Amino acid sequence: MTHDPAFAPGARKQLGSHVFTADAIIDFARRFDPQRFHIDAEAAKDSVFGGLCASGWHTASVWMKLNIAASADEAELAEAEGRSLPEFGPSPGFRNLRWFKPVYAGDEIFYSLTVRGSRPLASRPGWSILELISEAHDKDGTLVMSFDSAALIRFPQDDRAGQDQQKA
Image (tube, rainbow, N blue to C red; front, side):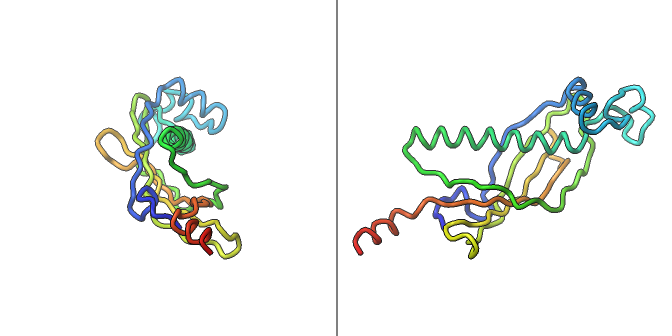
């Protein structure tokens, strides 16, 4: 386990923001989710959304992009400070993906994650499962997307434990 407050239950990390442009919405949707309200601004006006909006998968994909970028920035900072960071492994999946509100062209969306907790894995000694709440909010703070996610994580050995093992 770790004593790093960044991985304590309730710890929240801001991942950054993204502005969804009409061109990017259409490009993503043409390739991955070609529904009329994602690819045609005129047709979208007559849809339940009333205008061009991003695919929910686009919204979720941006969360992942910003999560990876924030992790890379944190790794660079930790290296400069001489700190060890946990090693991340694969994700066993996610649950409860919800899209609460459409994301329209021009919207800036703010992404974050919150640590729910972690627990050691008996099947993989030295590894734990890190459970997260992943969210996206608009500029007014309204939740537009959320999901529960998990990742395998190997925390650095506690220095005190390492010292005790060296003495033994």
